[in-house]
Length: 263
Image (spheres, rainbow, N blue to C red):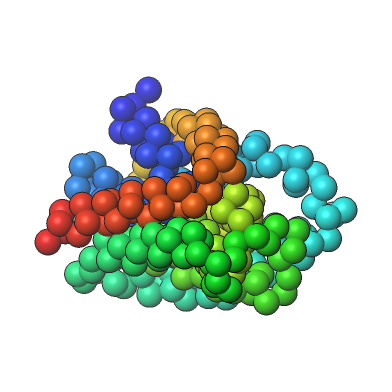
């Protein structure tokens, strides 16, 4: 097994579910450690979303089996995925242009981290904005559209899909464990869309890494991702506001580290 693909798989399997941008972490790792161009590294990160699909599908297979019975879940996935595509594809094309210039991918992480910390602090006080009691099954048309928009925005470098969608759901009033569950389930069609976008719009990038290496990285990221999902959901269900606060602090630390590294 090639150490490069083992590392890429582990990093993808862990960072995809945290409020830090897995795309950005993989971009910096691929570019500055393994020597790929920034644009190619960005596409490699999107290509490894296949591991996200596998781990999400394995963990949430019971929910997926019930998707046509649970109309709320089917409606949420359809609406959010369509909106994500409408927002995300143009931003993907813009992002590849931005990568030809100079950007600081750590700044969006700092913003998400601050938003999570603010939500954790607000949740300790009785107020409308801090009321996080809605369950996943209560998600309707408006919230599904908002979720799709912010998930599409996550196609930009530096913006964590999990981080921005979980943060949005918390501010919409959802419990942190339900926010994580909705975000993680929605990652399945979103990641499939990311894979299709790269395959259609930039096929040359996929040929940069060997098929065997891709399989290794995907298998490892699927296994690590499955374990990560279980741990995070248990922590979110048990600790809630403390978990949100910890995610915010961790995200700020990573954002600062990336900002310093790219100076």
